[in-house]
Image (tube, rainbow, N blue to C red):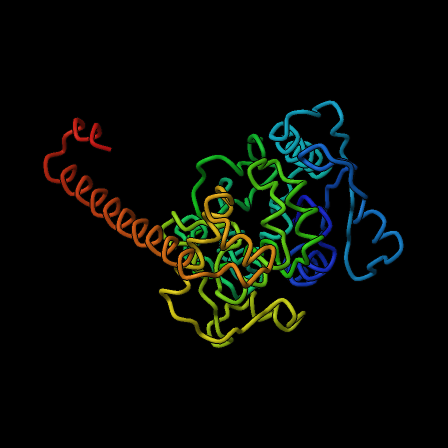
Length: 347
């Protein structure tokens, strides 16, 4: 028996896709929700209410609830307790069963599950590369390309904290990748609600979910969380239909509104846009002209002086980024050459 267990927030339509898509291999779906978010804010029981009104006769779905009130004040304890509560439920009521444990938006591929399930000897991570806002807006940041927090395991194995989500487990070597559809097609209100529910306190910013910021980020195909300092510089790769994996193709057939195919843009301008968004999120007062232009939507502040000052800052940041990259490569080279631990002091 294979169980699909995940934490739900309010993504009903994405859950419908996940349940339908994974029904090829999954026998039962178990959804955990609470009347509190991981940040301690009250929320509705979206899944309990929905499936009571709209039962799915073609799927075996169980929605369970967890009381998070005892852990108010500690967002990370709330999140960890939620995952362990779901894990305990699996071990108590479904002995000798295999299971997938993940967030709702981390959807493994059916083929990848099949590749691993028959030979499963221990818990493993399943790879689900990350897309932002639209399913074909793929992040090229190393940590997002290699995103593997979903776990395939069994209640026959020893129980691991959070099911192994934060543990260094072996990663599936299947060539069939899933998808991590984070913030998929969220409107500003929906995104704001989700962000405020995160344990990640640093994401509780109204700027991130501002409609003008999201429109700007879609236009330039960049990460709305900034991320200019990452190896991808915050740029997103827009996949064409010919590049879709099987799971992404099925996602497109399910709801094409979750996809966007904007016109190509100049890469230097895209880098500049990513830099500006990152700086606005860091300190909007420094980039006040661009903050007003993008968020407040006041075009008249785009003066030559403001543009010139910000362009200088941008070029400086680019030079500094290249410098850091070269320094990092030099340190790696010296480590390999001299095999000396002393070189760590230069980092």
